[in-house]
Every structure is written in C-alpha cells, then in structure tokens.
Image (cartoon, rainbow, N blue to C red; front, side, top):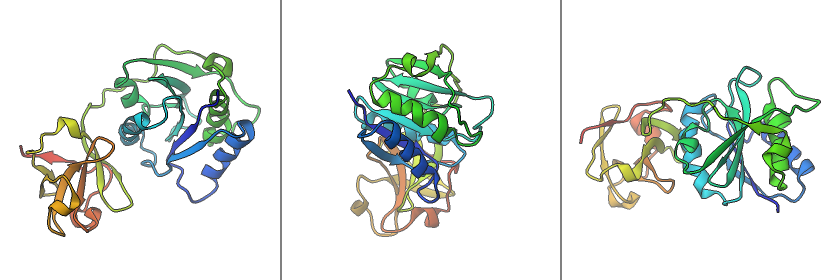
Length: 246
C-alpha cells in the first residue's frame, strides 16, 4: 500500500533544491502523493524546527512518510535516520530535528540509514539519500528492507518541553512559539520586547493595531497584532524570547 510523502524542509521554494527532491520521489515512487508541508522551516535551525515538526506531524495522514530536512551538519558526523512515530515514518538527519516528536510519542522506533547511493553529494543528502529512502518507504517497503538497521540511541537533547521563544514567522508576520497553547492559561500576560500581550480568541476580538496572543490551529501559542504585521510592530525574529507576567 502506498503512503503519501510530506515534505518538511528549509530549502525554500526558490532555487532548484525542492524541485530536485520532488523529481527523485516522482522517479522512484510514481503516483505517490506529495504534500508540501513546509519549505521555509527555520534555516540552519534544527532546534526551532523540531517544535514545528512535532506540532505538524499529527496533522499528517496516519500512514504518511515525512521527509524532514533541516540539516546544517550535512556531510558531517550526524547520522541519517528513520523514525516511526505513532505509525508515521519520518526520514531525516539525527541532529535533534526529531527530538520533540520522539519525546511526545507514545510509541516510537528508530533506524539508522546504512544504505548509500552511488551518487552522494556531500551537501545534498536530501536529494541523494533521504528522498530515495522515503520513496521506498512510501511504496510500503519496511525500513529494514530499505537499507536501515535498528537504532537504539538516536540523538536526544535536553531542550525544554515548552520553548519560550519565537520559532517561526509566518506569511502574515505573526510569530509561532514553542509554547503549547493547552498549557498556557488564558489569563497569562506575555511579554515580547517590552510589549505586554493578553489573550484573545480571535483577531476581531481586539481593536486594530492591538498586540495579543492566542492558541493557533497547530496547538502552539502564537503572537499577533490585529490587522498589522506583528513582526514589524513588536520587532521580533526567530529566537526572540517570550516572557510571562502571570
């Protein structure tokens, strides 16, 4: 049975990288649906990306293969891996990118990718290594038959469960954080660069130009300014700290 492939990368949509990965998937797994999940994950930043990936994986089909590449150490000592997380298979680097998804899983297994292709660019494992393995998995091939061996000790990092930082700035200029909205009481007052933000459920619940926070559709605390670009008004970027008064 075929599995859909969801792409989570920091490649961007400009340039040749995303297209080359899709070409490999189309060539090696014709007819497999490909989901453009995220092409602008925080560049060179597996830590921030890990919180986004963990929030997005549950939204994918239960049989999905997630090809996740945020890999500043490509070609170095980090290992390529596959993880099964609640039935979904995730292919990517063992550099912490899968940390939060593995931590939150009730059931998880991991494999090290030991197969190597004849052509393996030092700087483009997304195309040459991860995409071919993802294509096999998408066609129902088991990890062991796709050139993987059991891995008992994937990279585990002591990052906090709740990351009080901006981890992503979206198309509208809003800031997603590494804080889970179900763990944040609605009476909490957040601080961003000296601005005090209270909770609002919707954008129209506050006057235009008012900063506020809310629980977004991915289950994360998000910072916004009604009808404005919060990025400009609050002057934040990925890594900006999120404080809390109450």
